Structures are given as C-alpha cells and as structure tokens.
Image (cartoon, rainbow over all chains, first blue to last red):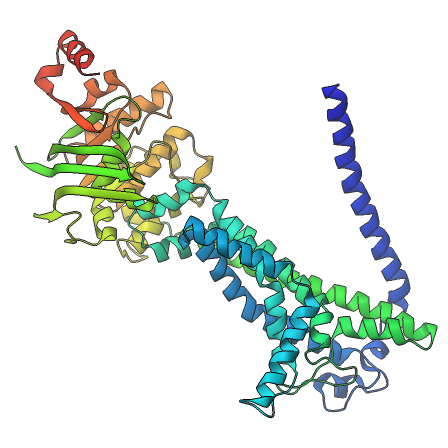
Length: 296
Length: 251
C-alpha cells in the first residue's frame, strides 16, 4: 500500500513538472509563432527613422520603443527603491527582531504581499490627489510615482526571500563570525549576506519580473498610450505591459494584434535581459567575496 | 603560578533557567585546563562566558565576575574594560563541530585577519602560512588554498578552525570538545597539536572523554549541575586508579 502510494506520488510529481514544462513550451511556441513575424524596426519605431527615434530627436508614434524605455526605467527605478529597503527589512526580521516582532511584522509583510496590485495603484493615485490639494499643487502622476508604487508591490517578495535566505543559513555561521571578533555589521555584510546571496537573488528576480509585468499599478499612476520618451522622472510614460493590454483590447486589425504578440515577445526578452544582468551582478559579488588571495 | 583568568560567582541563566550557579575557577597561564562533566552540566556555557558568546543567545543573563589577564593587564570581561570584539579577538574559540566559513581555505583565515586584525593585503600570505604550519595543516593544503574549505575532511576542517583562531594571535584559546566530532586518528592529531600550543597560549578545553582529559590536561575542573565540584591537579590524576576513584566520587 505504502509502496503504491509512493509510486503514485512520484508519478504525480513528475507529471506536474512535465506539465509545467509543456505549458511553458506551448506558450513560448505560440508567442514566437505569432510575434516573431512582426519583430523589426517598424515594430519599434513605426515610420520614424531609427536613429532619430532611438535618440528621441523625433517622436515615435507607431512604435514600442518609448514603451521599452519606459518599462526599463520603471523596473530599474522600482528596483533601486525596493531592493535596499526589502533586503534591509529582511535582515531586520531575520537577525535583529525579537520573536514577537518577527510574528507581528511577518504578518504585516504577508498582508502587503496579499494586497491586489490595483490597490497599490489606487494608493498612488490618492496620494497624488492629496499632494495636489496640500503641498504640491503641480503634482501629477508619472514615472517616479509609478516606480514608488511598484516598489511597494514587490517589497514583500524581497523581504521574505531575504529573511528566509538568512534564516536558512546554519546557525553556526551566525556564531562563527562573532566568535572571531567580527562586529555584528561585519558579520552581516561580509559573512551572512554573501552566504545568503543566491536566496536573495531569487527574490530580486521575482521582484523584477513582477515590476516589469504589472499593469494595474501603472494604469492609475501615469502610464498613457502615446507619451513618447519620458524626459524627467515626473513625466508620464509608456510601458510594454500596458501597450500589450491596449493592443489586445483595442486592435482594429489582425496586424495590430500581431504587433501585440511581438510586443509581448519584446517584454519577455527585456525581462530576461534584466534577469541576466542581475545574475551577472550576483556572480560578481560572489566572486569578490571569495577572491583568491595573492599567494607567494 | 601565574594566572590567566579568574572566575568568581559566575551565574548564567537563559530565560530564567539557571545553567551556571555561582561557580568560581582559576585559570593558570600557559596551561591546559580541561572542564569535564555530564552533558547539560554547563560546560559549553562556562566556556562561552569567557568570551561573552552567551550574549548571542536570546534570554541570556550573566552575573558574577570574569577577569582575564590580557595584554599585560587584568580586564574585567563584563565590566566594560574591553569591547566585545576586542575581547573575542584575544580570547579565541574553537567549536565542537568545525565551523568553517563557506569560502576557500585561504579566505577562511584571511577574512578575519583583514577585518578583525586589520592586516594589510601584503602581510596576509605570510601570516596565513605561519598559522597553517602551526596547526600542522600547511603541507596538506598548500597546493589547494583556493579550493573550498568544505572539501576538507572533518579533522582538517577542525585544524583549519584552530589555525583561524591562532591567526588572530589570541592569548587564551577556548576549545569546546575540539575532537569530539573526529575519528580516532584525527582526534589524536588535534591532541598533539594542543600539547604543542600549550607553551604559547593559555588553553581552556571542554572534554567529554575522561581518558582524553587525563592525557592532555594540566588541571581538570569537574562541573556538575552548574557548579565546580572538584578541581584536580596533574599529581592527583596521574595515577589512574586514584583518578577513577575521584571521578566516581564526583559524578
């Protein structure tokens, strides 16, 4: 009986993995089939000359280049806000917090993680309304606000993965550095965080992916269909997920819908590039941590 | 006899649970003091009280005085005479299980050297070689200093930990059952090493093995339920039958 159950479960686990792979492969094939033909300079720049459009000297009306730039800036900005905060929050919960604090704050982080993204968008929208009525009459939705709200959205992933990665280290490791006379900060920055680097990295990947794809937050905080390249942090912007949504919902021809698939492919490529970048960064840190000493 | 440390009325509790109940102990300089006692008697806690490592654990409360002779002067360990990081540098600790850092063999030694002792990059290799030789490990690792320390055998890892502690030039070295996790051969190598180190360092070790304690110790402290019930000098435990009678009386 137990053996049959074991076999059954193994089979189930296998089929779950294979099924996931099949779904992913199917999705990719579908996307490439529909999207690949529309990839080209016309998709990115429409009828604008490439060089002029690339540098923003001429506006791009019919291409997704401004949306690429918008999404890239959005993700980088949101990461710059969220990663330091999230890692620091995770460090606090894992290393400094008492058991009680860990329970209370952990619950709050869970709550934040469970919050629908549209609420984050509404929060940003309400914040701008409040600012307009009080301190900053000229405040408007834009890149910075959207990135701030996105960073709220991804913060819990970063906090949780950092906390889990640090708590997952053997407790002996916490003690080793201290017993050698390292200060708590040295122990954290030179031993614990590097050792937890891979785990923290998975949180960063989750966060980057989430920030790149989310539409609900930016919908209420500054994305528009034809903003062109943003010129300042408070400008309105275009973004790839919103362009996809827009093209899917409002296309007037099959060719326009195909451009939507092409855009989806570009978004996938952009996130993959950001992942690679993050991965390379982590590798560099890891190597620097364990650099060879100059041997005689 | 010159002293390296004096412990008076030391009481340590965790969340109100008393582990050490007001014990006193004298630690002679350049000698090997071995603490023995049944498990749960507070051996490790006593050892960690000497370099304030109990404070890492939540709910720890330490009372009494611990005075150590460091750098030519007496310091009150819990009186704020010395920063906790400064104390831990001068009072090294080797754990029961080898606590290696998940980095290369070399970095295990150079990381604390750089961060704690502030050694310049130029001076690192020489000091590293010196302590690896001191820990009888140099010949085994000199060709693979850049490979992960985790790839070493248990005995080698433990000697690496010893070398790492020695690299910081401590005056007192605390050893928490340093050979308990090792096989017979590796354990006897560590024992030889300790005998070697006695001339230059004051050693305080916890041991679970009576025969080991008898082989290596200069004095033995018998710990039971948080107090020291008996101090034994070498002359007393040199004779095996006398030693066993004394132990039976006190365990």
